[in-house]
Length: 446
Image (cartoon, rainbow, N blue to C red; front, side, top):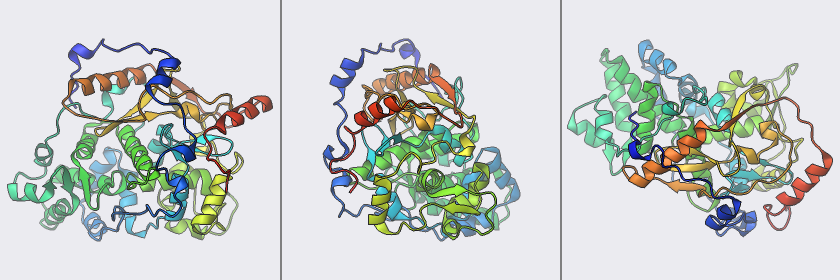
């Protein structure tokens, strides 16, 4: 994808310190003091909402018609897990009570979940492994998928078809509709054409739209279309997928619609909260049979022969009580699939990391989640002076400058290998928990 920073290459402003950070962006608020937060509105029905996660009757029949060569292209592009999840999409059952209860603990300022003794978030490295993406490594910033230019959807779709009637049916407003693309794929497969790469590109749009970027029922934005199109060029899409999910969690937490990869979210909840691998268990876990983990658990060292820690948690009230009193012991901080993995962290205070996508720059704060990152709890970090979610305006000089700043911070970020065990100091833990109480909702865990 074209990168053109020209005059902005060296124009990176210096960090002006924590005082400026506090003045530029308001101090951390208590979760229940955030205006409009759904924690204080338990009667609000936010999920699933707007049919964003309805079943797609055309999806599986389309995938069953694909020629092996096109499937091979999808595997080459790192979409094997997404393909498997899409092929089983109609079997998945989303447990909206657990999703809602977890979203109620999402802090829109920190982009993390606030529990009584710790913070947690969906790490970029976790998402990449769970979904089978090629993983980002420091030094590969040029391969992060985003664009600073205006997006022409027809030029992207022209690789699939140049017929204007098809293009008109596939697009409207600022969105691309998946059903007409699926119909084109089905017609190509039934006619046994040899457009294998074009078919694979079209399939990538459909399966990524369903699994990674669900935004409106059966449609995706032009920005996410461009992200998906870049996969075949070897670009890394993890940041765009995670940033989109973070933005969807914030939208839902503030009473708006939930969007983003609910499949990735439930994989994360399954690994950290719901299931525990038990090697000598003889019976399959019935709870997992309709969970995304049953289809991609192998790479995560998780099989259906697992113990469901939350089997007795039924209904929204029970999930709220369970999650609002969750302890460090109940949350699997470092699942086996993360042992020894290298994670990326801000180099220091002020050099905050932000997830790059075509819709927004989204604040990424793994350093707040000490135990997940294999570190002892010591202090609650200050907020960055960056906004948690900064909407982008592609084709704008300031947007180009902001993207360059974000890239520079990834170029200079710190790295750390996650250890299986962490030693903590009891006194430091108590100081940390006392500081964390300033973020926890008023009224305790009721």
